[in-house]
Image (cartoon, rainbow, N blue to C red; front, side, top):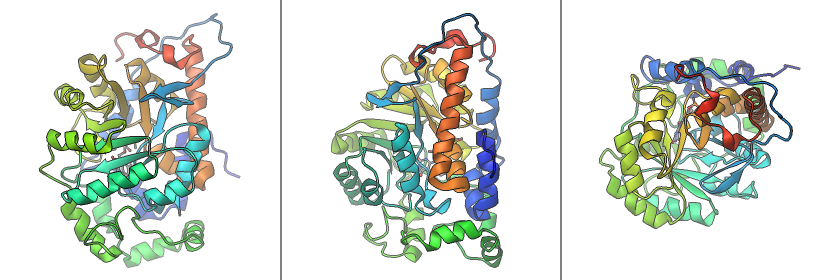
Length: 381
Ligand code: FNR
C-alpha cells in the first residue's frame, strides 16, 4: 500500500496510473511553462511569522465563499476532460467535495454532463461557463445549470484564444483524443485505468455532444469546439450572462487591476485571480504575484479568490493572508483522482486541510477567518 502524505505523492502515483496523454494534459503549462512554474515558486518565497504560547484549542477552518458555507475556503477548480483522469472523474470529484463541504466546479468541457453530476450528488455544485459564439448554446447551458440547482456560475474570460501546450501537440491530445500507436501501447501499461473505463457507462463531453446544434458525435466535436471559443467576447456579454443567470456570478481569469475594476462594474459577486494554471499566456505574472495589487484595487468591493500553484494548505494560508477570500485547486485534485479515484480527491482535501490547520496554529491563530498579513514576514511578499 502506497503511503500518501502530500500532494506530490498523489502526483507521482497519478503519473504511474493515468495514460501519458491524459496525465500530460493535466500536468502541462503553455510554451516554456515559465508561468506555470512561477505560480508554485512564488508561493514558496512567502515566509511565515511563527508565534508561540498562544491558546490553540478549538481551531476552525470554516469560512464562506460567495456567501456559501465551506468547511475550508478551498474549491475544486473547473478542469476540462476530468473524466479522462479516471472514469466518471467529475462525478467522483464532486462527491468527494460534497462529503468534505467544499464547492466543486464542473467545467463546460467536462466528460460527465451537468445532469450526470447532479444525479450523483445531493448538494448544489458550481458550473463553469466558457463564452461560445453560439449564444443559443450558452442560453441552454445556463438553463441546464439552473435546472440542476447549481449555486454559482463561474464565467471564465481568459480563453478567447487557446494557449499552446507542446506536450499536448506531441501526444496528439485533442477532443476526441487521437489513438496513435504510442498512445495505444501506453494505454496497455495502465490496466487499472482501462478497467475503470470499461466498467463505467460511456459518457462523452456530456455538456456538448447531443446538446450543441451541430455536434452529434465525437468526430464533429473537435471542429465545433475549436471554432466556438469567442474571440470577440466583451464585458457586454458578461452583463447579459449575469442577467440571464440571475444567481451568484464569479468571474475567472483576472490578472490585472484594471480588469478587476471592470469585473466589479459588471456586477459580479467574486473574481478569481487566475492565469489558468499557466496554461494560457506564458510569461504572465504568477497568480500569487498578481493577487496583492488586485486586492488593493477592488478587495473592499468584491470577493477576491485566486488559483494557480496551490500545492499545500500552506499555500492556501499564504493566499488568504494576502487578501483572498477563497482559493481553488486544479491539478492537486486531478492528481488525487488519477491516483486513487474518489478516495484520492478526499485524500487531497484532507492533506490540504491538515496543512492549513497546522500552519494556522504555528502562526498563532485559531480561526481561518482571522488570517491576514500579520502572519507573513514583511519583505517576503
Ligand atoms: C484547467 N483550467 C480550466 N479552467 C476553466 O475555467 N475551465 C476549464 O475547462 C479548465 N480546464 C482545465 C483543465 C486542466 C487539466 C487544468 C490543469 C486546468 C484552469 C483551472 O480552472 C485552474 O485555473 C488551474 O488549474 C489552477 O492552477 P493549478 O491549481 O492547477 O496550479
